[in-house]
Each structure stands twice: as structure tokens, then as C-alpha cells.
Amino acid sequence: MAIVQFPEGFVWGAATAAFQVEGAYREDGRGLSIWDTFCRIPGKVWEGDNGDVACDMYHRYKDDIRLMKDLGITSYRFSVAWPRIIPDGSGEVNPKGVEFYRNLVDELLANGIEPMLTLYHWDLPQALQDRGGWANRETIDHFLKYAETVFRALDGKVKLWATFNEPWCISFLSNYIGAHAPGLRDLQTAIDVAHNVLVAHGRTVRLFRELGIRGRIGIAPNTEWAEPFTDREEDVEAAWRRRGWLNEWFLRPVMTGEYPEKLAQWFEKLGGKPKIEPGDMELIGSKIDFLGINYYTGAIGRYNPEKGDIFGFEEVPMGWEKTDIGWNIYPQGLYNVLTYIKREFGDIPIYITENGACYNDEPDAVGRVRDARRIEYLKKHVLQVARAIGSGVNVKGYYTWSLMDNFEWAYGYSMRFGILFVDYETQRRIKKDSFYWYRKLARNNYIEV
Ligand code: BGC
Image: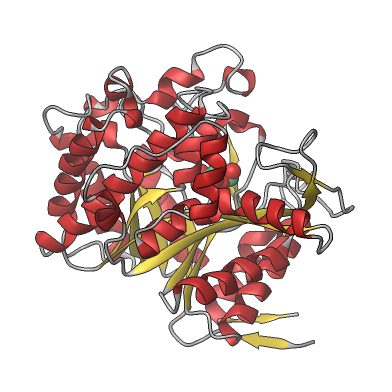
């Protein structure tokens, strides 16, 4: 057996997001979000599932924090629901909403767990979507007001702040592919949303500095790795465009204040172009303190203009194992993403803000959840993080997705990512085998392989 050690002070954490776990969707003045609406459109979410109750964490957070403590994590990543803080997105602040997150954060701190707060994990107030949502630049101003409210309420308590979770999902997945709320299918809208979200990100970072809020601020984009099937130029280019869409389109402007030229030209060929106003790019490139990286999967593919995606990228099935949600298991891709970031953008501190696997193992006859495949997945990815650290990538921590099974967006409750099993009938939490495995890792700060 070999031991792979992590640096001293490395953060082991776990993550969730408001809409996926909180429930209490009409309680204490919470407004409706685009996901409340989307869940009610027939055919959009598996079996019409919704977030009305979810894991009921709104009421059970104290018990759940006890479980986090037992797990031995030193940080918990969660998101704030904008519709709890400003129910209609632009009007009055709802004190009860603010109070909930104050209590949550106080409880975390009392248990020695550092909060990492994400301001936006997809639950846009519906009232703003009714006025165009993120495609309307006015939403940026409303977001700034919301961010300021949260900053002021939790200044000094929260030290790790992330502006947006996965801008690719907010824009392309939700407005071009149409799989997530609001479910549109228009490339220009997706590009506008991406741009406005990036501007909102940059302005939020500036605001954070102007207000002198304590702590560090970053963003949590989703990444994937696409590798060319051969080293033929056209395959290499197609793979670059494909991963560029996911990675470069967001990382480059945030890190350098510029869109990737080659990809911008490709979008233009497809009839889409960002509407850049003077000063936007400087704002987007405002210096951040860390990058959050979400990583799950990747692919190998070749150029095929007929059968490929809009980038001419056609996946070639390599016979890799897949998780229960059908995603390729590609641990090396995480190493590739991390070393690419170092190469392109330097030594910015990185937190893996999400990594985990969907396996739908249920409790056995004696109530034990034997999710050995999740343990394997986590082990393989954590090892790639260790490789990246050894290669000089400045990775400071790792948050597994997810602390508990929860509302998996368009898949509803049919897909389980948790290291805690949630029985949605009774809201009972059961520690899976992976919970115990992760606890050992968090305590030891090394991995046995
Ligand atoms: C999201 C999570 C989601 C997870 C698994 C990420 O894209 O940030 O909210 O549950 O992946 O799909």
C-alpha cells in the first residue's frame, strides 16, 4: 500500500446548493425562483419532481451540521437563495431570509466549520426572469444589490466567497441547450447571458473590495477535459473548441479580461456574438483571490462536421466506465484541467469546489449503503489532485459533491450524488460507506492506495 500525503492545512470540505437541499419553498417570505417554475412545466424535470421540500435542510440544518462535524470536514460550501433575501429580485430585503443564513453560518462557526458561500447557484428570482432574466443587463444591478445585502449581513463571519456557480450552466445549458431553467434554446441569448453573468461577477468582485468585506472572493466555473482522438490538426482543433466552450470562454475573460479569440470567431460563424459595452472586459477581469473548479467528466473525440456538436466535436466512445448518470469517468481530465490552468493563468490558489459521482446505491437489508464505486471514483480523482499539487498547481482544498443526496436538477431525485443517503419519505440521513472513507481522508490528510 502506498500513502499519498496532502499539504498541511489542505481543506477537506463538502458542498451543496440552496435549491437542491433547502426545501421550505414558501416559508418565511421566500419568493419563487426560475426553478420553482421550471419544475412545474411538464416534461422538464424527471417525474415532475420539485424543490418544495428537497432535503428539508431549512429546518434540519443543525442536525446536518452535526453530521458535517462527525464527518470531520473543515469547510462547508453552500449557496444563498436570492429569492429568500430579495423575494422579487429587486425590491425589499426579507429579514427572515437574512436571518436564516446568519443562523446557518453561526452554527457552522460554532462547530468549527468554515463556511464557503456561493452567491448564485441558479435560483434566479422568477420576477426577474419575467423581465428577461440574465439576458437583460438590468439584472446585473439587481444582483449587485442582493450581493451587497449578503456581504454586509455576513461580513467577518464568512471568509470564502464565490460569486457564481458554473456560468456555463447558467448560460449555455439553460438558454441554448434548454435542459435547465429557464429552458430556452437560443445561442445569442446564451452568449448574452454568459456575458452579463461575467460582468455581474466582475462588478461583484469590485464591490467586495470597495466595501472592504473581509475574506477572499472567487468564482466556481465547471470544467471538463476534451482530448483529441488523434493528433490530426482538425481533431486537435475540435477538441480545443469543445473544452474551450466549457473552460476558456469563462476562465480566460475572468483571468485576463479577454474572450478567447478563436472561439469568438467560431461563435460568430454560428451567428452569435457577445454585446460588449465599454469597460466590461476590465470589470470581468477584476482580480480574484481564488478559482473554484468543479470537475466531473470529459471525453475523447474527433472532428466530424456532420455528426459532431456545434464545434464539430464528435465523442468517440472509449469504453470507459460511466457513473449512473451516464458520465464518463475520466480522472486524468482533472489533472489536465489543473495543469492547463497553471500553464495559462499562473499560480492562482484553486479550490476544487465540486467533484463527485452519481451512484444510486440503496441501503441493503441491514441498512448499509455500500457505495464502493463512489469511493473508487473519489479516490481516483483525489489522486489526480495530489499529482497536480506535486506538479506545482496551487490547490488549497477539495469539496466533494455532495454532502447528501439532493434535488439533481432536471433529473429530480432520481440521481444520487451524496455521501449521505437521504430517504426522501422520512428525511432520514444514512451514512454511506463513502462517508466513512471520506472521514478518514479528512482526518488523515493522506490517502492510502
Ligand atoms: C452543479 C451541481 C450539480 C452537480 C451534479 C454541478 O454541475 O453545480 O448543482 O448537482 O454538478 O450534476
